[in-house]
Image (spheres, rainbow over the protein chains, first blue to last red):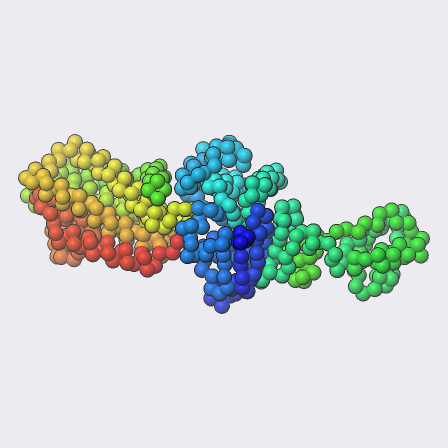
Length: 311
Length: 247
């Protein structure tokens, strides 16, 4: 029998009063992968995660984590998972290193806290009380706490919120490192670049449902549309955007950036590119750049929901 | 499990003793009440129930110390643990809820014992002479009073912390502490409250104060007061179990 997936959610429904937070959500997380759950605030990411972590009882549908029921098999599951909360989790007066050591002492076979702290750049704030740590330091401590028990699976809720770019990169490296060790990572984020950079698989959720799943490459390739950046050798003639739009048809959007460049958003095919270069010829301008940009996850989300993914 | 519970209790006791306000509540205020009360009584030259003031006040201040830590400190600490997500995070660790509770109780007993040692020393320095009429009965009465008083007040403290917001818990726990210290029959015998005494002896504070005084002044085990404490502990436990929210 093949090992069960790290996480299996089937038809999960969670409501608070008359507000539906999760609305028939299903997804599967293979072992040893980094899976991102991506979506705007209020999409149901945290509720879904907290149901997997055993904090909430699934109202409808089923949730299995490492093949176990997060409620019934809680005692067997908890030693095998690590959790990083979105915020807080420590006493205000506890020192960073003290907190990490304490959480280590609750596990049977913890990692070396000194090495883990150094790896996460906590070395210089070990004696600082939690309330005086910066936002980024709190996040790093939270991540260290999630990892200290050598979990098979970690849930990280918005792991890099409030971090500077350097700390973000270190955190990404660390998450990639633990994947190499075979640890499964489930992370929520509303940062597109984070999901694109880290995730093996991602699930975009909106209004409590998975609207699309796949690898970042799958989701950004073969799109229905692409962004084309056109830069020409001399200023466009008067009315250029309108005439180009007429050439390309109603499916395309054209926006002039400055007198020599335009952004074209339209069907990602050779016909579009052909029409753009024919239009240039007719208007006596020479394309110097004609880039077919890959779709970003931002575009994917916008296409699927008609709304921007606020970050 | 035992290892985790010990780690948790060590951590909580350490944090409790590190916190200035908690230390004020646990040691400084009881010492001031004891020294102030004894000095004032000596000046005015009163005695209480025919006993020297220090012999009546010391058991009362020991009861006060038990109440301050078990009720006020536990309520405030737990209220803020809920607020800061500490309880939530611990809920994702292998430490089960029962272990967390056990760790809390051990930490609490740790701090209470430390308080009692300090206050007994201060009392003895002020000339306190506990009764030696029947040391075994005194010891049994004292241990039962401390254990049941701790249980009753901790259960009530957890009840408050589990339903109110952290700020409201802070305010209420301090207010109740002040009211009970002044009028709850802890420091002074319930008999000194006149007509109100018949009510006060049913309060957990009055029952704890009386049980301590009975043990340390009269060398008796005050069965009725201990039963009152058992009833409050049971009530607090049921209320807490029914209403406590971890987040």
